[in-house]
Amino acid sequence: MGLVAVPVTLRQAQEFVDRCHRHHRASVGHKFSVGAKLDGELVGVAIAGRPVSRHLDDGLTLEINRVATDGTKNACSFLYGVVRRVGREMGYTRFVTYTLPEEGGASLRAAGWRLHGEAGGGSWNCTSRKREDKHPTQKKLRWEWEPDG
Image 1: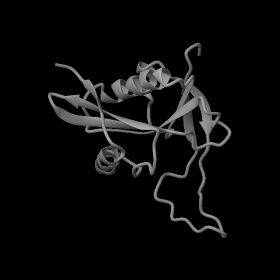
Image 2: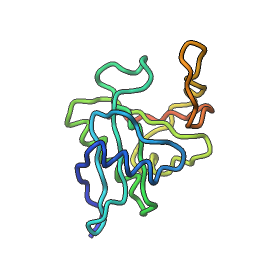
Image 3: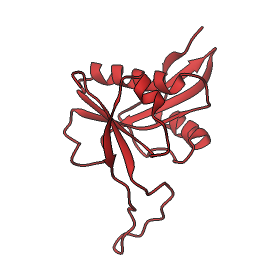
Image 4: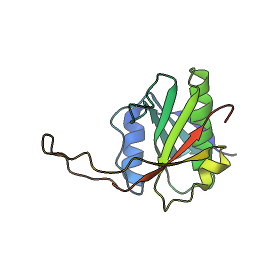
C-alpha cells in the first residue's frame, strides 16, 4: 500500500518537525496540519498557515510553513500535493513555501510548484525586541503554486 493522508493535530505535527526537520523547529500556529502514513506509520507531516510575509497575507494565500519526513521516498511531494488539494477545497487560491538555496526543490517541482525567486532572509533580532536566531538567516527561495500558474 502507498502513502495515505491523515489528519494530525498541531502538537503531533510540531513533535514530528522537532524530531525530523533538518534546520527548523516547529511552527507556533497553523491553519491545519496533515500527515502521511505508510503501512500505518507516520512518515511525514506538513504544517500550513498564514503567510509570514504580511504582503502575501491577503486571506486567499496559504503558506506551507513546514514539511518534515523521515526520509520516506516521495513523502515530501505527497504532502505538498495534499496541502494544496485541501487548501483549494477551503478556498485558498495561491500557495507559497520557501526553501534554502542549497535545497534542490525536486519535491516541489514534482508536485507542480514553480520557483518564484529569491526572498526574505535576515534576522528578527532588533534592539527593541531581542531574539535568538535558531534558524537559517540567509536569503530563501520562494516557491508558488497557483491553479493557472
